Length: 372
Image 1 (cartoon, helix red, strand yellow):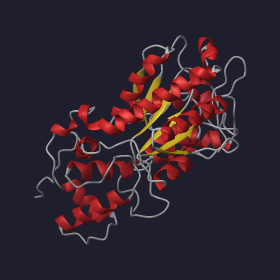
Image 2: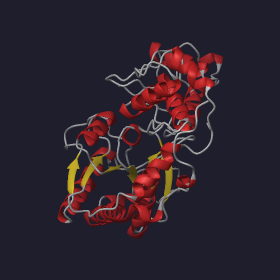
Image 3: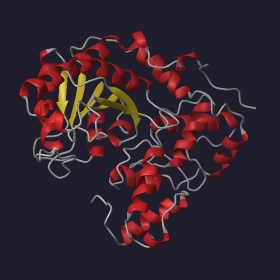
Image 4: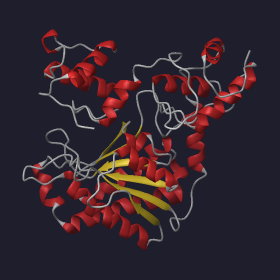
């Protein structure tokens, strides 16, 4: 989709504004009815921050999708397994309630997949509903009647943390999806000298693939040089490849003065991926040795992290908008050092991910709560 930004006007902007107002966000009256001014931009930033998205004030695919999803409440529509999958806050609430009751709905990502449908069927069977996997008002009312520990540690987090402890294996034969962020159609950030993010992520990704292959892994490059698939397409490809790990490479536009690497994993204010968090921590530790400064990890709910079904990270080795980073980015030897550090991190994660789980979620009780 075309990125909608400050200065734009028209029906698309009007639609965005009314969705923001419905969510309780404020827009100055002078901008209403289709003018994308500073108040609309700030409302977008506030919405993005609340949803675990980069707060850049731009309405791209991730932000638009979540604006639509935020408008749904559990019971607004009938939910069931289909393709394309239902997405929305109603699905996320369904997953949250099922997980709180001990029925494994999988990651609370707001996407109704097979795990959620199986959990719905099991819940329906337990409460005497027709076990058809269709979430109509009868099932919604039953979910609301049943006592649960909603608000406690999600059993989805517990299960993922436990699975991470059991996943250690050799890197040889491991399938790694490598995503060079952005591309020719959506180039991303641009440096002061005109270098585009989409041009610079590809050589790092290519060297990473070479390094992983040399260690016996099976890397897959998710974007050829002259193509620019949407993030959801890239996530879908990684899933279809049955990848064990996914690394998406970006070169961010950090706050002024920020120089260290940033590594993101799937998460919102309500949920996150323990395996993704652990991988992000390992990546950040590995990149500390490439001479940029101390790194940070953060939760993010962009498509490449939300829609992939394996441990996934989005890594920004440096900020492209930081003038001090440009000499590094243009140096092939530095790009190779970054790629080797990323390969080291993937190998360390794959071969011993469970040794230091990133969360205490596994201390919570596992198993279905008794239904009244």
